Image 1 (cartoon, one colour):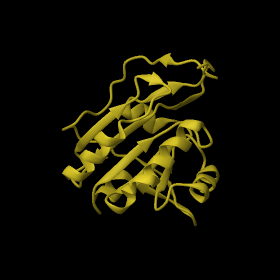
Image 2 (tube, one colour):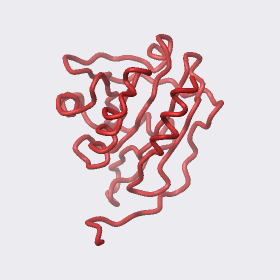
Image 3 (spheres, helix red, strand yellow):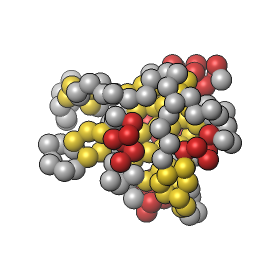
Length: 169
C-alpha cells in the first residue's frame, strides 16, 4: 500500500517523564463558546488533566486523535485538554466538528511545545514550529502519571495504554 506521505524519524525529545512535575504555563483556553487565559495549574487544581498535543487543527493527525478520544469517551473520566499551534478561531472550528467536552490551549508561538520538549520543525520550513503528537496524564499535584511522545511522524498514542492510565488514577 502506497502512503501519500513519508514516515519521518523524529529526533530524541527531552520531555517530562512519569513522576516529573509537569511544567506550568498560561495560554488561551478555548471552548465552544469563548476563550480565556488559563494556566495548567488552575485546571489540575480541579482534577486530573489529559493534555493532548497535536499538530495544527485540520491536520489528519488531529482529526484521528480527537475522533478516538471522542469514541472512547475519555472526557467522562478526566478533563481532556488539547494543545496545538492553532489560533482560538481555528480551535472553535475543531471543537464544532469534534472534541466532545474538550477544551484546547492555543500555543501559536509553540512556547509550551518548547517547555515540554515536543517542538517539531514543520516540513523543513525555517522558523515554523508545531507540536509533535504527545499525551501527558497529569494529576492534581501536577505530577505526570503517563507520558507518551511520538518518535516518528506520523505517530499516534497507544490509546489502550492511555485508557489504562486514566483507569489507574
